[in-house]
Image (cartoon, rainbow, N blue to C red; front, side, top):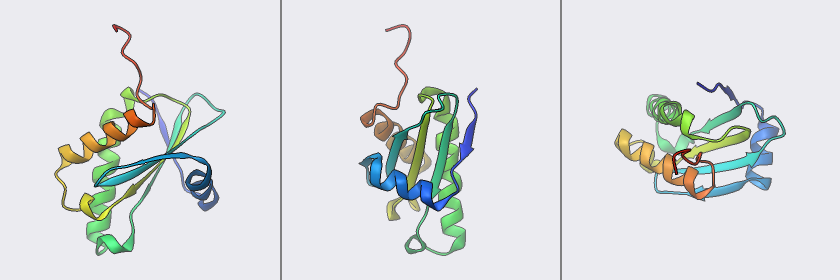
Length: 117
């Protein structure tokens, strides 16, 4: 099982927004940038005040983090990843969040290829 670190510093988020690749779906936007350290990924989740009160924002953040955790083994290592929640993430069912995350990861070549293929 891989270990993912938190991305917390503002300058790292800004660097990803400006230099990273991005893809968007109805529930979220995914920003990705390759790192020199190949061992682990760093994950940051952003939820705007526009999404709702603190309870709604924290719930959206927890659900996105869980969708990432469940699919972490399918992702390549050595990336900085920022997930920006959109308004639809607050009402979307969990399986939709998971599908959107995997779809975006596939678009950005973040998914591992199966070894059996």
